[in-house]
Amino acid sequence: MKKLLLLSVFIPSICFSQSLIDFNKDRLKTDQHLMIGLGSWASLNIVGSGIGWATAPNEEMKSFHQMNVMWNTVNIALAIPGYIKAKRDNPEIGFFETQSAQQKTEKIFLINSGLDIAYISSGLLLRSAANTNLEKQDQFNGFGNGLILQGGFLLVFDMTAYFIHNRHRKKSLNPLIKNIELSNNGIGLKWNLHASSSAGLKL
Image: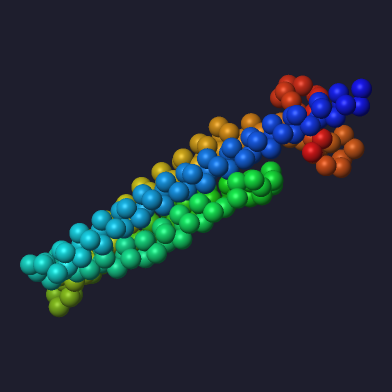
């Protein structure tokens, strides 16, 4: 009887842990793909605008390509460590660590989206300032166009990343959260095997 009782507790516990591990593996794999995407964009910009910077026919285009190169040097400096971190992070973490990591990831991409709007706004302000500063008009227009392009890309990138992670959480993590509640004695947690059932597994 004791063996049957231990088995009935042990098997659901393994399933629950495996579900968290699978969720974290998918979360980290998504981050790897995102960092590859960011790094690819940065690399293409550095090469393309590096050539454009050297061969630009006027000051405005030169400033535009210069901004792209400088901006994407930062992007690639973020993408490479980001990819390495996502590659090396351990997916075998507990429920609360998983929830914390997921919330942090979604929050980062939302905050970045707000910063991206600020970058675009800065580009528009530079273009506006060019109209009253004839001495630096070409430079301001070039830098402004670069900020608008890079800010626009990052806005799409960060919002896409947020929605991917948000959808993943709702699909795979939230069902686990709904089946977790405080144990009857208030000590520890229990995992309901069925959402509509009062039977649970103490964690």
